[in-house]
Structure formats: C-alpha cells, structure tokens
Image 1 (cartoon, one colour):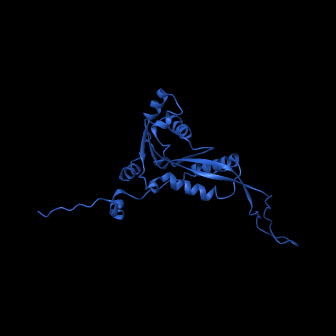
Image 2 (tube, one colour):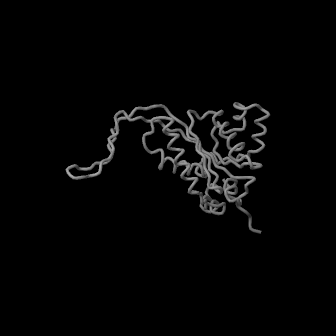
Image 3 (cartoon, rainbow, N blue to C red):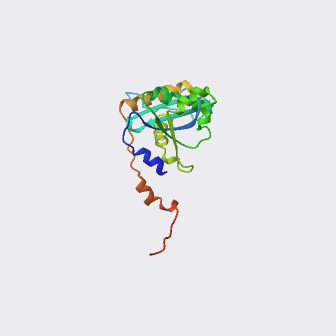
Length: 217
C-alpha cells in the first residue's frame, strides 16, 4: 500500500509517467422491442418520456480495459471480446511502445489478477520483443484486498455511471459510446486529485500495521 501511495505522489516526469490500469467485464443487452422516443407536450397531445420495454435479450459479454495517467490528464479505454493473457499483453505493448513511446520507463499500477504477469507477454510476443517491452515497464501491484488504491478503478466507476449504464447490445455500440466518452474526458483535461497519503494511511489504517512494544529505558 505504501509503495502505491509513494508512486502517486511522485512529481510529474515525462520520461517516467505513472499509469494506472484496470479492467472489467460488461454484459451486452439488446432491446427486444423498439424504443418509443420521448415526445414534448403540445396542443392536443400530452407529452411522455422515453419508453423502454423491460424485456431484453443477452448478447454476450465484452471486456473494458482502462488506462489512466493522472498527471497527464489522459486516459485510454479499449473494448475487447475477451480478457485473456494475450489481450492484456497487447494492451501493455500498446501502452509502452506507442502511447508513451517517448518515455524511458512507464510505471504501471495494477491489481493482482492472474493475467497481469510478465509471463503473459510471452504468450503473445516473441521473447526478444518481450524483453524490450518489459525493460520499459515497472509494475507496481496494489495489495490483494486493496484494489481501491487503484486510480483506474475509480475512473472505471465514472465510465460505468456516465457511459455504460444503459443497454448496449453490441461491441460496436459499446466502442462508439466509450470512444466519445474518452474523447470528451481527454479534451476537457479531466484529471485525478489523489489526496490519500502514507501519513493518512498510518493513522486511519493503523489497525493493519504490526504492533510493537518497547521496554522503557
């Protein structure tokens, strides 16, 4: 926990940016009946809100990958059919070799999901290229029961509430909505103001620290 908090309080360094990543599955739901659009009230006609039937049809799942660089006010969201090791490896390769190609090393904050390993890159890329990617990565893992320390998890929550709360029946529709949301957030430079510090942790979470007793001299 303290290592993650120290990373968040580093000064901005374009040669070593800090990026948080997280992922989540979503379910694709299709409407079974046409949606009746809202109609304003007018002379002789009463208006009504949008009408959506309660029935829906399941249309598979998708996986959302979130990357957030809090000091750059930047995020990238990818929507994939799966969340396997090769999928994660391709996202990391894109992050360090293209998104931040100018950086010497990218510090990546992430959780302990079993696909989030250095070995996962070897399931997708040749060993020589894997080493090139990994030399430019510094993985910092959140505690097993401390995923709330991941800034990307908070950004995923915003995405879900603002963009993924309705019925999105296809991958194409999800990608369209997510792209529009990401573009708006980046254009308006929506940043992250992380305030929880190591000193705060030692006070508010004192119960998780080991207890020591010292004899009086």
